[in-house]
Image (cartoon, rainbow, N blue to C red; front, top):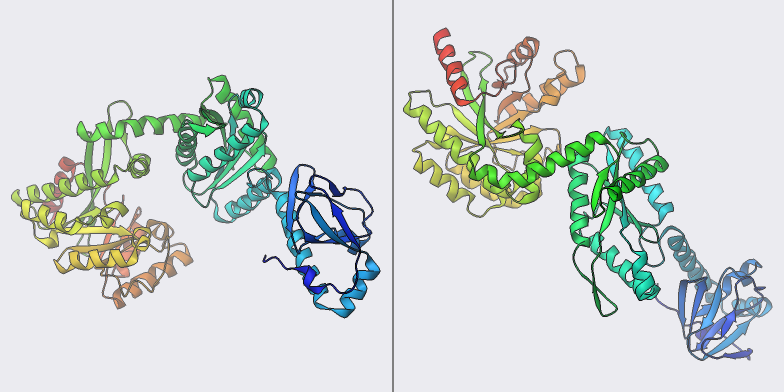
Length: 550
């Protein structure tokens, strides 16, 4: 709010009061029979140790108590020598009658200060972060959203280890400076949609919504621990902190705000018992999953070097002829201890560590090499579909790399298909369109994967260079019994045909689904009813059996 100079609206001889620096102008609980216009100097309005407002020349103090005939709810103190113009209620009414704008400006000031007081009622005065009251309200709202969407969220309770020693050795002023630095450091490691709050002296909390709870929350907690492990410069010294973090998940660990916070707090004590400077889940099951994720994360780079990754291929067939028209390349990890690890467990970790581009390139090269081997063995020229990650699509050399692989393995462009999800496309629509147009111009097939599950915007379909549209298995699962899924599937097929797109239905698991899609003239189907994803040797036997049945 722009400061208004109230002295410009005052008329006549009004009583003046001079107050020395450091002297109280009025105290909390006093009768509010006057308000003051600050003609000169600077003053602060305080409620205990909390500063509600700093007032400079031309500003007003004490207007609320005067207007509502209540005792003062705050105190005011002069920061500099102040000259005050005292105004009682009769004088104020006279001045308003002479200058009506005074009433408007006082109302604006009152609204501004009420909003400031409301902010302070819900935020920590030191760090300006949400306080416990507002944080509980944030959890309540997240719970309502999760109930509607069927999703979940997590609560992280962050307790600074041995913070009392800082206050005892360096004083509370240094401790306050450190808490502000901690708040800033933690905020910098969180997503802008996450909520960071200060609950108490050395206690912070974080609300994280969306994603897979165990893995996402473990990564966030580890990032916070690493952030706090870096040196802080306070009071001319380098200080090092650690923290114990407890994690609870909705709905597994509680159905309300108090329970989730209590369980996260209980997990903090578990982390402290284990030696501090670590995190713990309230759920023993999630603890195990999180530790497994950390193990996988540390083993990922070695997996590339040790050639532990392998590609499986899932056939896609024509519903009419049941001939294989393409296969989708799907990565698996043959972990030496955990066995065959599905991509849902390690791909998110690869994205977090930045290894996804390296792994994606390995998949692309291996799939091209395998397609070349099948060609050499006399297999028909069916397409091999490879999923592209966001990082691959954003890479400047993607087109050159794909062209290089086609040339190295002597593949026709029509033998390769690149699949992109809606979320990847919409991250940078202009950039994606530019790259995909170049690839498609070379004859490479472009497929939109998981259509209808994310943005579901039809406007981009006519602009993006697409050849194939994949109907997500979440819609296929309910056909032909579920009328909504039937309607959606029919609509997608009609839309695709009108746009000249080839339609692939994935997740076909029953004969009834297969027959229904065949009757709708779906171009290709993919799913466990046809075949699960197969290693190379088994896929070749599948192809041989198909040839034998022909």
